[in-house]
Image (tube, rainbow, N blue to C red; front, side):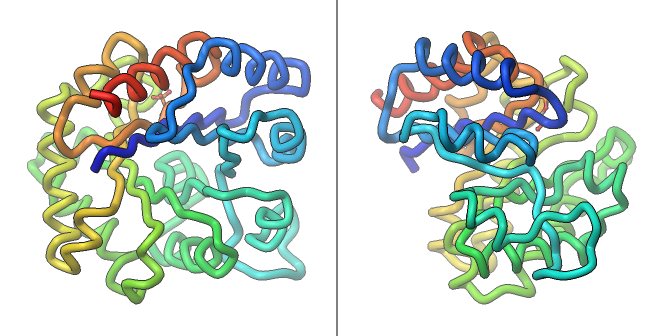
Length: 254
Ligand code: PGA
């Protein structure tokens, strides 16, 4: 797979002035590369702002989607609304949503379905806690998170799937997985997909997330089964985020 995906997860950060400056800085510092896809996921209230300001090579993503279609769900945002705002990707199953908002695999399955129904590409996050890792349960846990979604979907629904492997102990901690240990899990994920379908295994981008920055990106991106990154903290610094994007772009040119 030669395509790379560099996804900015701004989480609950930013305001109109900050966002505008961030997009301008990214634009100024990024070397556009067709094989390296840049996806920007701002906070919900700013989807429209980013959609209006961003250059066309930046693709709009959201950080959440409701598992319901419409109606009395105070505070929720539906897939139809996201599609209306030209949102092309959505992050689903982020560990912060699983842990802080009790989203279980059932909820995540529902959100996945709503993304597909509205032609929004799902970025499914999976990843183990430090306890799982220490107990040797990493693979089983990740298998259950992936299986919860793929076993209940037809292959046709999985064509646009992106998986992001984010070990929970590496998110926002500055403690990145080593490229080799990340690759071990990425290759396990690829094999898990292979058990369902060879095209699915071949075509699904598997991104790494967890304290990615411009110092560790190159080594991570050189791993065979790492097809890009989901970036939190470093995506709030335009120069830093562009550096990571440019590293991915250079590797796709090699
Ligand atoms: P981080 O966040 O880059 O700040 O570790 C990644 C994420 O939570 O998606």
